[in-house]
Length: 107
Image: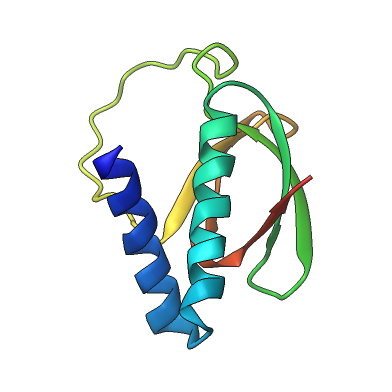
């Protein structure tokens, strides 16, 4: 529970420093993002995020190991980017990502 709250607060402070919105709004967005990730861990979720060009994208994604196809393990030395959320797009059948700050809502 402590690490969950820590993650939520870190995201909220990042949002606050980046956007200048009220901390309450940033905290609300951080909680909604956490809930999205938790729901994606157990199944397919329909959600929306704002693309870089400003348009809103509807996505069907998951993080459930039961839905994501098995892949060959690869040697990947890439540093994890804390500003983006990765998910498996069930429509495109591939991994995608969006900026955490641009998350809009779960349908």
